[in-house]
Amino acid sequence: MNVTFYGAAREVTGSCHCLVSGDDHILLDCGMFQGKRKETEMKNRVFPIDPQTITNVVLSHAHIDHSGRLPLLTREGTFHGRIYCTPPTADACKYLLLDSAKIQEGDASFLNYRNAKHFLGKVKSGGAGDLTQAQVQEIRSALKSNDYEVRDEVILKLLEEQHLEIIQPLYSTQDATASLAYFEDVPFNEPMTVGRDIEATFYTAGHILGSAFTVLSRVRDGERTNVFYSGDVGRFNKPIINNPTLDFPPEHRKIDLMILESTYGDRLHEPVRDMKEKLREVVQETWERGGSVIIPAFSYGRTQELIYFLHELVLEDALPPMPIWVDSPLATKITRVFGEHLENFDQETHDIFLKKGINPFEFPQLKFVQSVQESMELNRDERPHIVIAGSGMCEGGRVLHHLRHKIHNERNTVLIVGYMGQGTFGRLLQERGEAYEKNGRKGEPPMVRFYNKEYPLRAHVGNLRGFSAHGDRNDLMRLLEDSNLEVKRIAIVHGEEDQSTAFANYLNNKGFNTVIPRRGQCLEI
Ligand SMILES: [Zn+2]
Image (cartoon, rainbow, N blue to C red; front, side, top):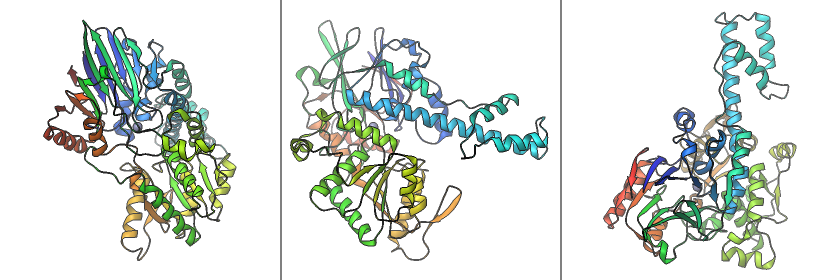
């Protein structure tokens, strides 16, 4: 038996590993590489394994860096296996994969538009092509519709006629929809057959709703070999969902190889529980200034945690009477998925909400934006409110419109509740905003540029760092030391190199046997 690491090897995104035993090829996750387009483009387009050789897929959870390339696996129709995951993961993928396809299509459409515009610009200055000035003018004005929507049909026709490169989306909405037919949901703790003599069992990982550890178990000639795939490891005492599993049945305790994530292998987080009080403080201060709170947040997990804490604060009568808006069609759908999987909620959620017949994601102060029109009205609403909107790193989506209308006003607060990737607009806001706050908000406010315009960042910028969905070093160590697992060897994946290396050193000092595989490397078990 062996495992080859095709992604998330000495980096965070693109989780994809292949467990091989005899003729069986079991794919563990099939994630997308995320980050700068230039660096990830080729890594995403080239699928590392021939889909027809793959027996089945085991999917740890719905996040796109674990699931995002499934439509590429199923697109050619040569993959004949199933995609096994927990019921909430299957439900969330219905929305997340389609959303991902729409983003891919939008990106391709924008790049084609840019190339077309560039070409017409060259023609105009006498550079290339066989078009007359009048034709160029006509096509130029037809590239976008009256409401500034890019018109793909005009652009593709031009690019084709002029034999220019046409950028295809990584996959289409149709490809994403087709991949959903391969999903097979299996509840936690129930073994399933995924290969000729390989069984897999999901255990709660506590990272997001439905996220799973997987134990893959092969019994041959009376001898059992176990591989533990962590997916993403959650945190202990997070709201809503159960803690990561520590108690495994006897047959799954001796682990020959553990494939373990290490996003925060060298870091310690603030407790999540403290976030409720800090959230209350930020809201209260902003309310006293007469301003609004804008919270960029991921649709899956973070948005629902915020709703949960805000609801708790409302029940405790600790929140000012300002409306709370969720302005994200995706987050609205995902919140519904949460409402359909109460069986995965933790005891506390049952005690505070469910036993009293209260839905944690429904209360009068909370409203879900229903239309673009309503979103635009909210942009201009000067009455104090809280708005939770995507995208989480401010790279697009409705949050940018809220920022555009509120960022210049010192009464307002931009509240950061998640990781902002390097080079993202969210990171820029975070860094400039925090520097200005640190400096006592003295002098001219920093300027930030988006939508082709400079804006003064007068709004306050706050950061609740304790909200991470990934376990820190202590959480990872609890899984290794406080569980009843006996782990022979650990392959450390899903971490920037500095985190993985520091974590490996830490583990080695504690007597564990570790390896940090490179992309393409194969480990014998
Ligand atoms: Zn994840």
